[in-house]
Length: 304
Ligand code: BEZ
Ligand code: FE
Image (cartoon, rainbow, N blue to C red; front, side, top):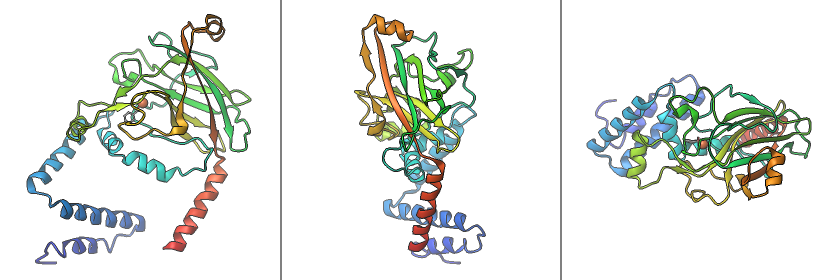
């Protein structure tokens, strides 16, 4: 353990993990150290660059508080959040895909009833969203809970605004006995992730824009089914190909069809012109997920 060199320093650090009692922790730390050292070697990091990195991570930490999580934002824009999501939510075709949760979810949004307006008082294009929650055999999921949230037309969520008088543009809605849901809102618009911190600076240095394509957030859950954390994206949005957090999936991009029909608008409780969107969420029974995880673990064990 003396006179360590470029050639044997990594092994010396890894050897220090021998006594770690938690096998999973040991596996994660071993891999992290190996990759960190390999990175430093590959780019031949200078001392100035190392210090810049330390200062950057320090600034990310300083930007965090109970309302702002700059580390998650960093993970999002580097694609780590979506990679973790992909690994943890491998689903068969036909089951609704997950995408990134994002930092603006709030527990305990107001409960609304089918057909209610979750954007009452907010300016924007009136929009009607309807659909069903089904299981993988096409069975309706009665009483499924839909947690919904979105930004306003300026691209801000309620928690980013100084005073909105409580929870806004977010709601919890229960599907009916046939798994059907419907609600009114405003058409979502594209918006930038927060750029007033170190993540904004690093995006700029990478020559990247900060935009997310227009979307509505959903968490769809029901007892006995795997919860889906997802979005519905607006077809035609210019940022679908370059979402700053890499969250777009084809199966989640839908038409928000424009209608000028006064009669239809009146029937739905809106004013024309308005947009109409529909979607069927398909949830996987929790037992099917548990079975797949067992098979995956057995395959991993056989490979090891
Ligand atoms: C969002 O969609 O709310 C979001 C996701 C990742 C980072 C920032 C915002
Ligand atoms: Fe969002």
